[in-house]
Structure formats: structure tokens, C-alpha cells
Length: 153
Image 1 (cartoon, rainbow, N blue to C red):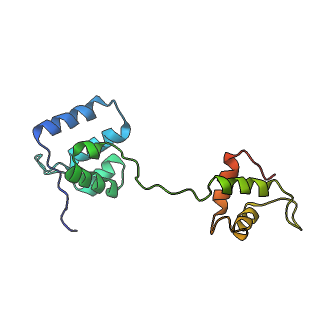
Image 2 (tube, rainbow, N blue to C red):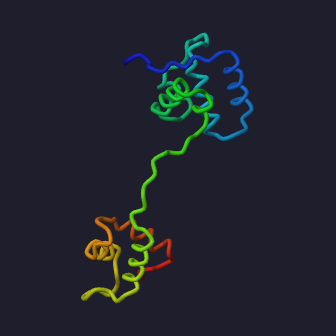
Image 3 (tube, one colour):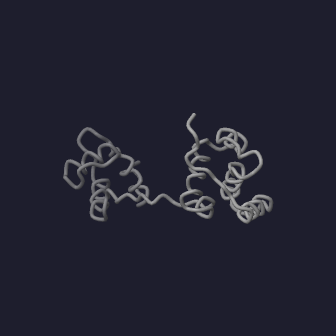
């Protein structure tokens, strides 16, 4: 197994602050768990810190979580490692307001020949056929209809 790339080395003040956070037991559970990870992987203590697999097993998290917390601590600092950050990736909406309006109009019309009602797949195909969107999933159609309180039944 390769050597650890990110080594957590806490000074006395950081260690004391983390011990206070963990021992108090008040606060977000995720923050306390991350504090425990940092304390257990700290290489300045007598035993040199536990291996990631052992920390993961003791705390009931994945080994990858332990690795990520160590990496954040070394690269960005303890506060960043303790606090959860939301993913920065955002997706553009597939259906804009005009497309949603068209979807509503289509869903409120008579079902196609040979069908008793519209299905999500039929609506999806109709949106693509009318070139309102290049591609869309039936799940996007479903969530859009749900948001508008429309039912296909």
C-alpha cells in the first residue's frame, strides 16, 4: 500500500480545539465525526495516528471519506475539513418556461390515436418531435408535471 500523501499534523492548540468539539458532543454530527477523523489520523500523537481503514471502521464511515477529510485539512485547513460544503456543480434547466408551458398544453390535449391517455414517454417523444428540446428524459417530464400539479390520470 502506498504511503499517505496527505499527512495530518495538528499542533497543541488545534488538538485542544478539536478535543473540545468532540467531547462537548454538541453540534452537527458530521462536524463531530470529521473532528474525530482528524484526531485519530493526527501523526503528532504518540502512536503516530491510525490507518485510514481502522479509522473508517471505528467511526462507521468509508475509507474514502477519511482520505478526503485528511486532504481537505492539509490543503485548505481544519475549518474547511470540518464544515460540509455543497457541491459547486449546477445544472442548467432542460425545460425553460416556454417549454414547460408547451408541455402543459400537450398534456392537457387529447391523447394520441390509439391511446386512452398520455404517458411520460409519449410526452417526452412529442417534445422532441416538435423540436422544443433536443433531448429530455421522461423523469424531467414527470418532475415538471408534478411541480405544476398536473396528473396524467
